Image (cartoon, rainbow, N blue to C red; front, side, top):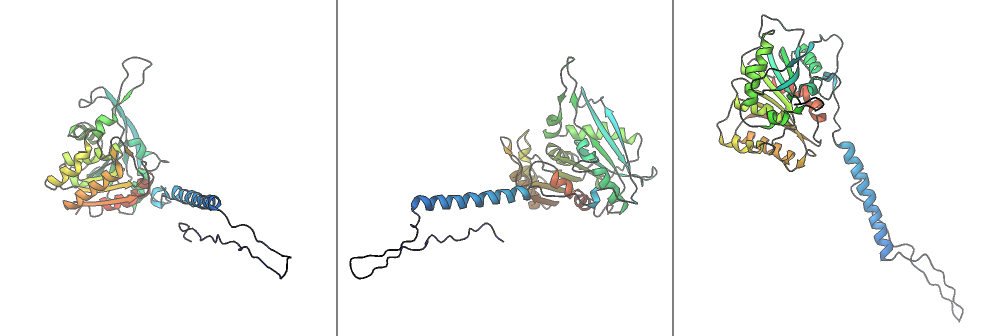
Length: 331
């Protein structure tokens, strides 16, 4: 049933009828008085408000109505990888910062064979076993079904600057690291974090075997790393990416159009109800990114839903987005 169309209302209530008989006596029977202008307006406004309220409720139910599928839950008979927590506090590229990070190693990993690598910004968000993404569980299932290669996951939190005095809180370095253009964060990964992982695990140096992902500012960060260093990363996954003017990221669509195409595969996800603020409009910015990638002939996919600035849609899409990113590896 389409509730967007109001049912017609018959305002012609029983018309007044006058019955006369000959002679002075007059017998008159009257029905209720038809509604006047005020009553008609009240009735019309009432119907409008009911319709608006119903449609608003329906829309609220539709927004972010995305559910995790079986590939995002632990399955019987599927080997579970190991997730270990670490900390890093000796960065020379972001001096004075400290951060946590997690390393996921699948059961199928063999030290004699270089494993693929996927890096996630805001690592704890993606690594949480009961979160919106549950990336380690998704890795377990897809690797088991051979729908993605054996891959080590590196989940990196943004840095925090230690407080100058006791009793003060640490300062987040997230926006500086993630929203800034240039190669600084790419250098942080390639020169500092990956060597930490390589101390214990055999990871591939093939850039087509390396992917990078992030949400919001972490999404534009993932793109920036591949844009600056396609020799190190050639697969990008961005969830509600902040391709807006937080620190100049709004220029990317123009840069993509005017720069020779780079060997990067990109999966973008955003929603019609994402942010719109002083930094820019996220839905428009992501649509401009998709249009620029299409214009330049990039290998890209853009999923545009009705969600807001969160990981609900991206989390539901994570298994399919990983299948798409890794679909022909190692070819």
